[in-house]
Image (cartoon, rainbow over all chains, first blue to last red; front, side, top):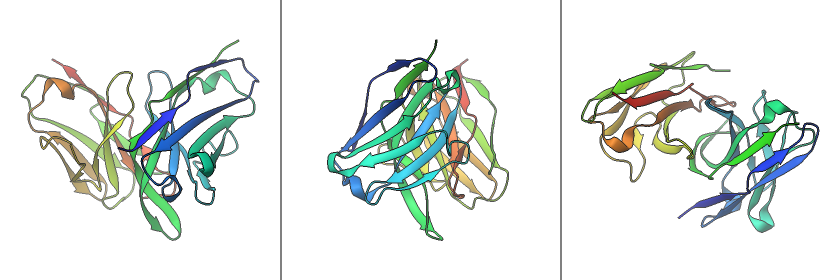
Length: 125
Length: 107
């Protein structure tokens, strides 16, 4: 069965950097886009962006472009989400998920069929 | 961005009830809509894709309908395991968006 296993909870101070990870297994990691979703405390789901580990093509939601960096290391089947300077408003649970869908005009469109367990990021002084 | 609006935000129901959640898109998304279920402290789980295609292993009491701008998720006979929050997600655009969620509570 497809598995996505995320790194553990983090507690950071404002201004610090952070990189969280998501390791995929039991499927061909380089053949599916993988994405990140934010859930702020008590709130709904927000689509952040996706990456194709096969060639590192990355697409961001306009809301998150420039705020985070999504990357992947296909040699170890792992995707990453990173911040260079955290803010208190980055406090949230971050989920990785496998993207499944189709292409339209060369762009990926789809939904998330398998999800990681989530990583809680707390940013507080 | 395409805005997705779910109604109601909260729904109180009893075991055995038939419940329907509505999701409206701010513009046509054809049938490019997914539904997820999320329980407290857990990751979302995909229930339905392409508006009406039930995922493998999802009970048949769940069903989805709609196209264009209006969609519904129906649970034909609510079970104790179904009390959760449900989200719709459009994937018609390059920047997919979720609805704000509908919490199904025990009446």
